Length: 259
Picture (cartoon, rainbow, N blue to C red):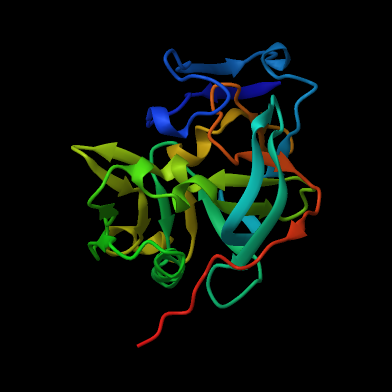
């Protein structure tokens, strides 16, 4: 067995996003090289195990944004918060497969422009109307108040499901947000300029990886790379979840804008 295991803990340790734990002392550990890392993986936790494509990408079959309602006091290690009800809307115009990269050297969520525009528009429809976004290759969005001022942050999640994998992941919007100098910043960027070679791909950066204990296994004989992800016990943001269950649907959080 050869590869590496990485667990970062929370990158943006803002007190308001924690419900079942603390990030006072998150791990920052990297194991690399030939070895058996099985003792570092919890066999009782749910996994997302996906094989990398020859071009180093992964294929996601569902990428959507919505809200999940879960019991704030019902966090389960290895599962997260199993919601009671959800509502999701597909990001962009197509529900077909989407190429994606997982990159520890990229901080936030990188999106092709049309997907970035779709996400920002959905957030505005969801009630975040005082957001300012700078349209350039390192764009991010900011809001005038601290993140815990905005209620939509608490229930908003991305649903991410890779092709050929039963389990999916709910990534809370809070994983991509942080408060600095009394303002809330959202680390969702669109790819352009020097990133032109990746304009058609989604990039899941370190803010995505912080949810998991990440174990990457390389098979040098078959020339394959497999990513194994299970929820880190150091990441307990509300509404994080791994599973395959279906849930009842609640009303849409998105209100159509009127001119």
